[in-house]
Length: 215
Image (tube, rainbow, N blue to C red):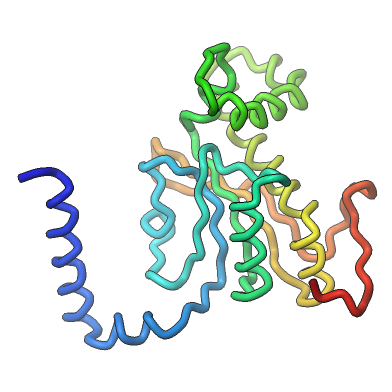
């Protein structure tokens, strides 16, 4: 049997399991979604958001890209963020990185990887921002792990610096932003950052909104 056909068969089994537990599951879930969380994670196949958090369909709104980056010119990510915050009214946005991330690993090499060089450049910048701290870590794996964490911390800040999040803070006093790291070696999630609504930001990144501005 060709491998892709196994996916189709697995889908049929999954549907039957769902129907056995809750016959109205698909009818109900097709009507609307009201997730409380936006998950911005890595595209790595070993880090499925719903699996590692034990959540059900409809509980997470998910965006994934290489190395879980939040880039202020990425219209794809920004569109997801705006929809999640302004339409779905999520209460929490989670940036989740993971140890042994291939994107982070390649960013700290001198390999020429074509188009992806442009994407990984953002992680190289994170390394440069924290060069003193990282250079002081003698163990290579520990240095790699710390860069994964620092990358998540940077993306959490990038989220808070968006006008989308700041406007929602003003109007809804939400969302709270979280930075987590998933450990492939143990299966556990590690909390490393949290920014609550209204947290003061560096002044240069702060937006002021007209009370009549709902755009």
